[in-house]
Image 1 (tube, rainbow, N blue to C red):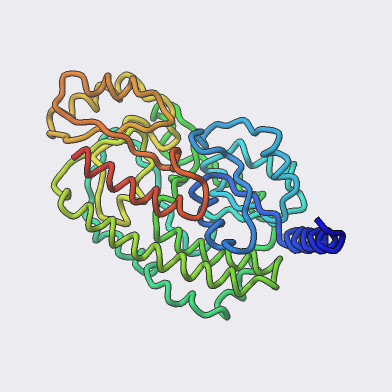
Image 2 (cartoon, one colour):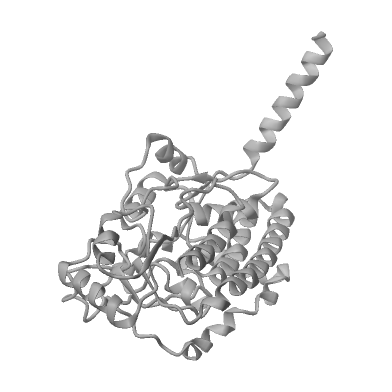
Length: 348
């Protein structure tokens, strides 16, 4: 290589490195949320994923590289302490200088209460029409609407331990201590569309030079999720008379968005081991109610599913609420939601 070409190559490398250094360092807790952040940052930079695919977010030990990513971060996006209470103190310790956003606490996020029983009562989903106010995402297309995102720049998210307040009346249910709402909020595509706007606003606040790209990516991501919801509805429509039970109660946001309720769950939302009485109740009700399908998860013990299915005619399948077998990146979120519908269809 000539000296001139070598000099030009080095200069280009340095310029590219400087440009990358000017973009914010972003850390994200789980793969589905990382996918949404990656979609907003597409063409600008790549966020760091803290909890690796395939691991349960309910309990996880950070690797040194993941701790280092948190420590170097300018921005942290996470679902919130309801899902990963162990991560709250870690963020406070390692990401002291970062702007931290607990997405489940943002205005416009639909949050649902825990379901404690093994077998769910199937409610009329018209009762949830008050959530339709979140369906109109056109209001977010104007960049002026994002001026209020400065409200999220404070560090109130570090005080999110309040989400662990005892849920009145639940102390007698397998002695579980959990927060006041189901933390699996990312499984609502409507919530995901709301979050895309907030993510763009937060990124733009620390990186105004790329604000146009962030907002354009967020708008494109919302349009993609609108198409996704139509695809999923088409997959589920022929199955609406079927009944299914899930391994743990993680899916009610998906159920509500698509008006496709589960009949029960082996474990409550925190994925703790079910009691023998709960397992026995599930087995009895599978036979009584003619349950078509019992769905396991790749993160948890498949032996429990085998125990429950023994002596029944129900089929089994796999639901994956965090995209364990998918490549992290902007495509993971829509692929994960679509795969949930496909798994239901193949099992029922």
